[in-house]
Length: 353
View 1 (cartoon, rainbow, N blue to C red):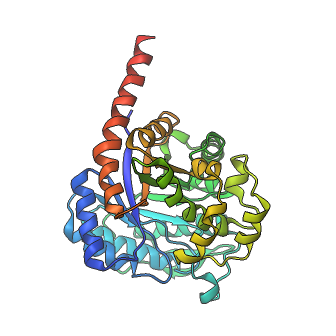
View 2: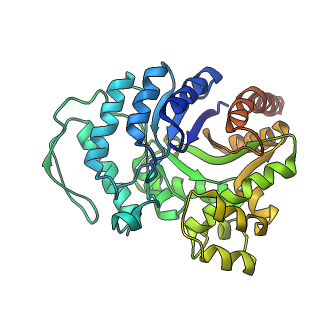
C-alpha cells in the first residue's frame, strides 16, 4: 500500500520564500507541491513557474482554481504553459472556490455543473482541439490554444465538500480532493460519493485517486496543537455557512454561541477575527477535520486514512509555535516513517491471515 504526499501553501509569503519551500518539499520527499489560487494574494501561476525552476521531480499545481473568477479556457492556457515550463510536471486542481467572489461581482451558482463543464472544456483544449461549449455555466465559442500542449492527459483533480461535486470528480477527474475528511462518516461520504459518480459514468472508481486535504500540526504538546487548529476550523465554518455541511455530516452540531459568532464573520484569511472566536470551537470539531498532536498521533491518523482508501495526504501545515516549516519537515521525517511502518504491519497481518 503506497501513500503519496502533497504540500499545500497559501501564496501569502514572498515569492523567493515560496520557491525555497518548493525546493525543500521536493528534498523532503513530497510528491506534489500545491499553491492555493486565492484572491487577492500573489499570482499562483507565476509562483508555480518559479517553483518549477527550483525543482526537478515534484508535481506542481493550483489547489484549487475555480471556473468563475478565471475562465476555464484561460486556466487551460495557464496550466499547459506551466506543464511546458516544468517539463511535464503540472497538475490541475479545480473546485468551487470561495474567495474574492463578492469583490469581483461573481456568482458561483451551480458550482458542480460549472466544474464539470470547465473540466470538459479544459480537456478538449489540452488535446489541441478547436472547442465550442454552450453549457449551463461555461461558454466558449470555437476557440483553441495557439500552441501545442505538452500533454492531453495532464492530471486534473476536482475538490469538493459536497455530494454533487464529489460525484463530478468521480465522473470526469483523475482525482478527488476533500478537505478535512478525518472523521469516519466524512471518509465514508467521500468514498461513496466519488464512487457513485464514477459508476454512473461507466468508470472504475479505483481509477480516481482519493486525496485527503488535511490541516496538520505536528507538536509534542497536543493541547497547543489543537489550539493552533481552532482558527482554521472557524474559517472552515464561515466558508460552509449556513448549513455547515462537513461538520453536520460528521455528526456535529454547532453550540449556539459558536454558531452566532460564525454567522457574523466575513470569510477572511485575517487571523485576528478568527482567533477571537477560536476558543468556542470544541475539541470534537478539531479532531473531526484535522490531524493535530505528536508525530505518533498524527501518524496513526494518516495510516487510518491510507487503510481507508486515501491515495494522497495533502498537508496544509499549521504551527503551534515557531514556523510552519517545523510541521512541513516533521511530517516527512517523523510522521511518514511511522506511517510506513504501520502500513507494513497491516500488510503483514493481512498476509498472515
